[in-house]
Image 1 (cartoon, one colour):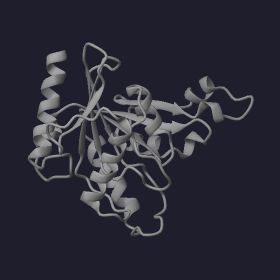
Image 2 (cartoon, rainbow, N blue to C red):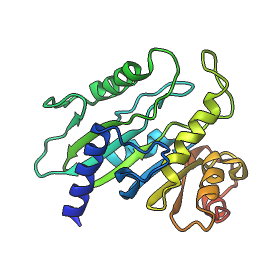
Image 3 (cartoon, rainbow, N blue to C red):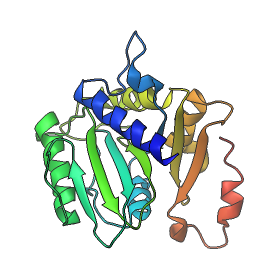
Length: 230
């Protein structure tokens, strides 16, 4: 299994280098054939906190509005020893040991591709994190779903983000992590809604509840999670 994960990681990196990275296409591509785990959620749903909990480091940009404006392919590599460092595919042979600089590089590389406005791009950022505290795993963090455009964004961005997310998660070999905050009505969850559309039987969707500490007094997370029928 470890060899298989390593092979998939290498193929994903090769696909990105060759311009094959999950965009809608009339013809099947190699990326379409690879297994993946995509993290989906609305803006401020807690996606970043989920990913940082998996890694054990604060390394993702934070802020208001659309912060994740490009897919982030996050490849985790378990190593021996006490070293922890990160590498980006677009910055070869450079190791980042300060995870605050990892956060800055994600933001800077996003701006290099999309400009300093609030545009989005489907070209992914490849980030590898090496640590003794992670498991060998690859996750794809996608831009947060939104219902309204903010200042400086075209009205079409709402549909553009949905189309990008859909292009990743509609593949039959993609496992969907549908992130929803527990302090909001799950009936209106953007993540659950789009997941049900592409995976109506819920065969490859896992619901993830965040912000449990913000639930109303007297409510129970177990009761909430039982209402999710992905």
